[in-house]
Image 1: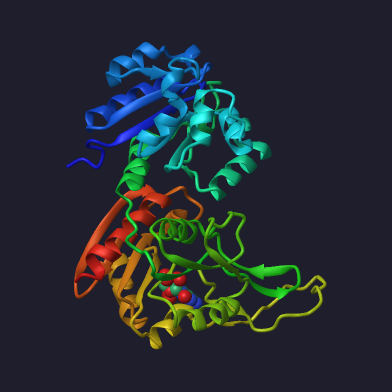
Image 2: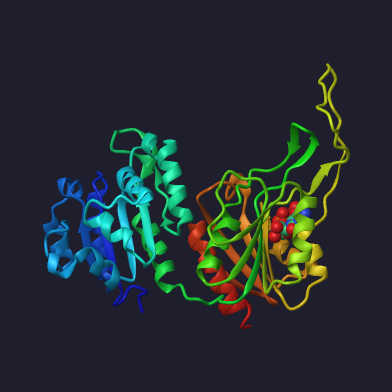
Length: 398
Ligand code: CTP
């Protein structure tokens, strides 16, 4: 059965060119069995008429606080719905939500929402990249709003850039993740490693890799939303850590090892997503190395393998690793799983620069003697949810 069947969804449409896509989205939701209430801002009505949404949903469309005041629509709409989706979410509505400005029906309803709210931003790339918009999105994320990132591509200004409304598929996947989420990790202690590590050879130079920590952050967020008590040991990244998570910021592989080993003993589930540097410069100089005419030889020595060390001391915790592979993916990953005493391993293909820093990813989970589940191609947020489902339903119950 469709995850949407019988579900009440509040679709808030704000005033951007992508508002026309909200009509197709409404139809897709209705076809999947959802009961959709549409609320529009005044600006949205400049782009699409409320009649379109009324015909598609078979329901009244709301745009004013003053339409049916006796039923207090801004409160009723968010009480009756299981999830609110803002698509498109313009820079204006994102700024208003971040500030708690509630001058119309849509912003008032969202301010009163105690249900999950999913934002699908769409705007010009300069507006999207503006520090004000980015800071507002960060604020909203920290407050628990979920975001389905815009895509890069052809914009209304006939230019190419980031800011196109996420695809219908990506929005439906993100909504499905929210609608099917349960408190399946309530009371569980989850330890996650994420991000790159930096191995310094002097105070201003280091060896590292392009990991942003997005996968670890997405998993930590999803685990919290499922009721877990989450600790995220996170290497250096510009991405903000999720709300409600204990974050231990580390720099080097040795720092990550020191932070992880003790905490691993207390955990019920450990997921290692970190792209730990495998080598570090043998010597680290306290002062900046002055450059002369000569080349520099730096001898690299092995760093500790954080996950293997946790695996050696494995108790009852479920241990899940990641394998970044460029060839012979499954064979290499299964060998890693055995070597590090893991219960399961999630494999991603990092050939051609894939996965690192990208918005979407493709994962396959391997466990047992020959079990596997393909989690498909999706955003890192959606894959995080699918991976936690797979661990709970397949890996643990096997
Ligand atoms: N890992 C770790 N500490 C390290 C290296 C890796 O905890 N020093 C963890 C990663 O977080 C991941 C798993 O081990 O969960 C596999 O990482 P990967 O880089 O794919 O494999 P490596 O063990 O480094 O092997 P190789 O580089 O030879 O592929």
